[in-house]
Image 1: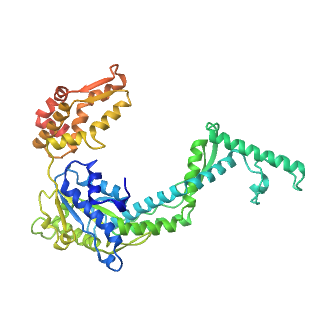
Image 2: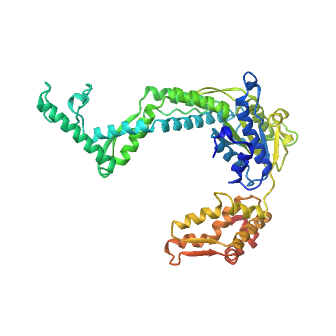
Length: 472
């Protein structure tokens, strides 16, 4: 796959098509938004700073692909991506999470992403250093080196009558020690020492006291800052832990990689990546929309308060995080909601203006369900076939059986609550319930799912509305 800088809107849509069925309008909108981020980077300043992202509202029932589109887009863009539910935020001054916490969470994700990239860049050096440390554990160094004195180029590991005056006997033992270390190195690389146990000092929690701030929203950052401050005064406790050589080698690699990474550079790069390419997916934004006139004490008052707090974040403001101030001017916001009981125009006018692109996602039908079950790279049929292949079961679905599952899923959605494609998970799990349970003990390793078999497995439940409501 091409790098993000060279992905055109058509190529982005093609990538999304590999995982998501239908919803062409939504795919086009997010593909254009993604390309516009790259276009903005090509514009010369100061005009570049004036170009704001075109935020998107996706309107459609549950289970039609709103979240999956945003998640796959973030994966394509290799950007920090955060999914939050708008309904969990509360107005400043009330107990709950404030809207600024989403920016802090997004920045933390960016730090984790950049740290992982930095550690991958030093894997070679970290592996070499970890190997040396492990050899030191297996073969302790001579007294001169363990006291902190610089080692000679040919210094050995085992001290066997080393002559401080540099006599012939000392040099001979030195070379012999070096040869022993190299033999151990070769044995380590060949896996001949894998069954040996070594003892390492491992950091454990509990060094710093736990700090909890019981107060209204907006105090999360204070709690984090206090926790970080205490952690500097109270170093982490260490305790000895025995582990096998392969496990110890991996532990030492991680430890050395962490030491080699420049944390200040990581924080700076992460903040920049958050500001320039961060994506926040605001789910259930319809839950904070007002529904008609609001009176004092009604839930709409709190909803309007969350909208007021959300507005400056979307417009562009500076949020203080433990990694430094983060500007939200160019973070892309993608909101979604079913809008069953309200409409986008019920949002505050100022907030509506910050989401200029609106996309309607249509409900899914029987043909869509059939394609969802068979076409995507991560299709459910492929997943269950792979799962049962681990039990040596050769699972085959006839096309008519897949169509029958799609038909029943649509039928149940119409009779009960419409949960979209999520219904397929329940249907296929119910169809394969007996096979999944008996798979380890089956003698016949070939199994074909037919339309009749699907109907037998689901007939009672699909026809009984009350059972469908609780089981499917």
